[in-house]
Length: 275
Image (cartoon, rainbow, N blue to C red; front, side, top):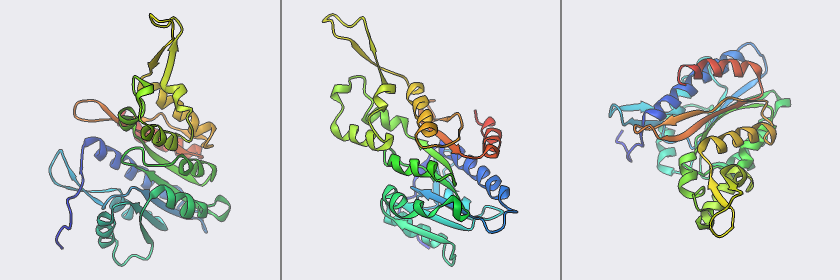
């Protein structure tokens, strides 16, 4: 069939992320293979079209939905969500004939919070592997918090530090536009990110006022890791993996969070290769 739109081009960091999620997905379903009555789902927010173009090779590569559909042992159901109607339309052609796939066009946070995540209940013997891969600050904290508090979900998260620095965490915090602050508050859940992003130098400046100094990525990434544990309630949050572009700049950090000790062992083994 003719391609109805231009596929997204992805860098090497995205290809590595896809490899990591694919490897964990296979280990995840294998871990549940002998548990009768338990249903395991794959949830892919910001799923894209299921196909990308590799900047490195120029060729087509499979996206996360296409890889998840081939997982063995298989998942029991799949939920793919994207705002772009052209991408979800193409994804439907890849999933044609499959009754175990639901594709949603619209706001991922709204669908996750209001419709999907409330159905993934530990006591109902339902489990899910979630990939939250927003294009920027387009995910609400409540979705991450619900995933943690469910006790039933393992989560990969694209922590978009480049977008944060571009839109909200500036060297001069008083100059940040309201839209940037609102987006950051929505992603973080409140405005406590400021405590990690800035520090005051007590000696102050020439006018006697304290200097407000922007912290590096490590401070805010560490604070968010603590937040996933202490506020969202994940028992285990792996040390996030910095994903770098061709100039070695960190584009985002790949987080992984779970409730299960066995998940910690699996992801540590996988990530060791990429660190």
